[in-house]
Length: 276
Image (cartoon, rainbow, N blue to C red):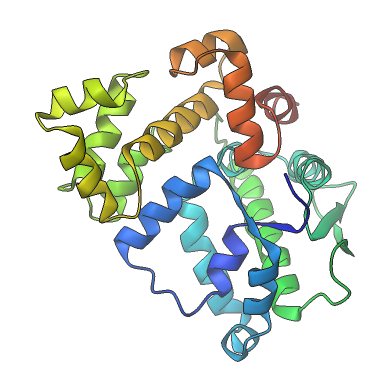
């Protein structure tokens, strides 16, 4: 990855010029499974706008929680299942070291009860307050999820709701082509687009035209579905080679490249971080 990146949730939450329509939210969910990062330059420009600066803490947290709930990026899918804040802190800090972020947010903590945060400016001389608040809010939301998982005895690995079809249904898109295609890829892993068109009874150009209305391609959906499914499988005991084959990657190296592009870390590191 190139330098000067930011994880996508904070920039989206601060960009008040974009309406959160169901189609926009779904398309962004798909895109950010595949690549969880955005260029930092436009993000930091957004963070200095009057609307972002004026956004209060409760409104920012509400927007970020809405986005987290619809996010299937491998990093988020794995970390929000953790039951220990300390495990979360370790996973978060490891992610920070694997990606060329414009600003690193390092967590200091040796217990589940308290922690501190250091913001390290790598590419910028100034850290806009709105960007800092968004970074702190993300940590607050994920650490709260870890605490809640522990208190209610949540068992990680029940990933039935972390699927693109579930996100589409949650957004009221269950009567659209993207919902049908998501189901097809989830139920028939490794399905290619040609066979997909045959099962849907349409030609490729028609399918691509429908997807263009969402700003997506069928191949985007195929890759996002494969990544989401492979992420869910990391909680199990299958080898990485078996997971890659099961979810339609050409081999383990192909899956590893896809994970690195999505969240900066290979699946082996993700699995290790959440296994402790």
